[in-house]
View (cartoon, rainbow, N blue to C red):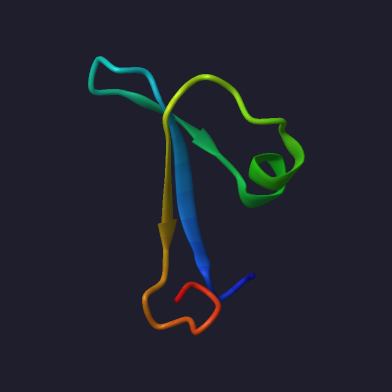
Length: 47
């Protein structure tokens, strides 16, 4: 997924976010907080 993943953030709800790297994102179990994952639209894997 190197050409697909751009960045990800765990959102705090107050307008801030904590960056999450790609390996941590796929290794962490789901939590009860929203996460923004930004993918490249040019990647066929993202589609």
